Image 1 (cartoon, one colour):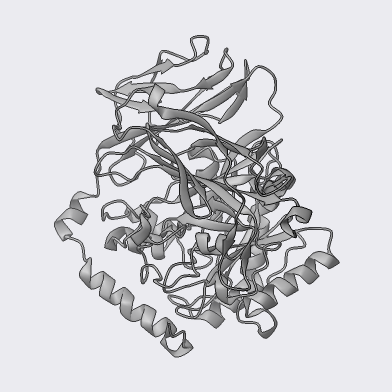
Image 2 (cartoon, rainbow, N blue to C red; image 1 turned 45 degrees about the horizontal axis):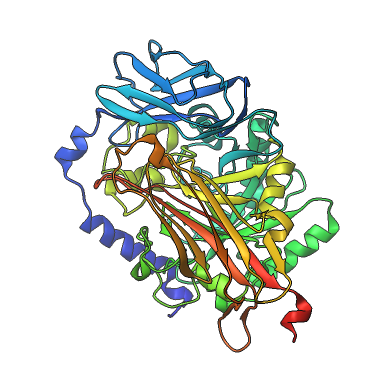
Length: 561
């Protein structure tokens, strides 16, 4: 593949014009899209609660264009799988509402519970809630850590996005990661100057303003941005705000992955804080990240964003990927660019997801909806950026992603520690799927996600438990990039609540064999992760989750025999 800089922005411009020409929407359809109709309810409850703990239910009404719908009428009936839950029998949206209703609730029985809503003959189910008898030592928190505002090529302010993520989507964690430079839409050097002169400090200020430990955590970061057809993008995240520095992708001392990681390592040595990076959409052909062609630093890059609105870079579409990369130039055909390739090369990376949405809607991207006109107010308030343009021109896209964190408390330090230790996983929006995965009792993120057995022949116990937001179609344990075990569910999206959960355990008594990329690169450990797929209607996208990996290594003395 040629990566000559001379073909970068120009090639992107030509391709964008081609996409616009091929996907120009019907003017009649755009005009009709000014008003939508009720499409569905979405209910968000904290994923982890103790018996009797008060919590807030956030109930949202959406139209067919992924916009909040304020025209819902009549009561919504409520049921709980917990007979001792304190929850009203009906919910009514308040007068002059914006499509969101909130109410207090609590659960009275330990276990896994759901809320079920009925409106106009349809059933809507909340995310699963794990209720414990005592205060839980560790909770599951949810975030969207990849967003862009009008400070780069997005729309809307960071402030507006933070409010939406906190107040509408009930997210626990949000990070805006505006571009340090640009390759299209904004001249690269212009964006670089603006970031260094004022935008980076503006991002810091807003991040600090919205940070509210225990209620809403903001993480500071930015996107280190290679130019189109030159290389891939990675997000840089700091565990604090004030001391964060901008090391941009055009500076000679940080214009390669390796030099950026070296500079970040030096920064970490000189400061009390920590920093990490996350490659994203590595298999997208316009911004490819080749794990096999870089000196990858999995200490400074311990996570890979396996899914976003671009699609999934877990594996190629030809191998069964339900979300093959569709935006831009589509997926790379050569090996080396997928998360499975990184694992086969021996890199210790966890799998996460976020949205990469370019507008003020953390936790709820809009681009996968049918073409529709943003309101005049949105154009005036939020500006002309990619999200509004793509909404009109139907850029091929998917729902964004969410990131789950296992943490003892909702603080920036705990969330960053979850990222650093890989106690985190990814799902598609808006599906807050609960996934527990362990081998010999070691869960993802514990003991460096590593199980050490006495020798290659030692059996190990593999256990997985899943609670979905819809009936589970399939839960698969992937071992060394191949399907090892499968829990088959149902493809019926209207199946009962019992089909929303699955639990299984197996004994793996095959010898530990690892994987090899080439003569010099690979891993002696076996690598396991979990892929979850939910049932969906034909015109909808299936909810998915990816969690892991866990590495199983034979004792060093045995391995050297």
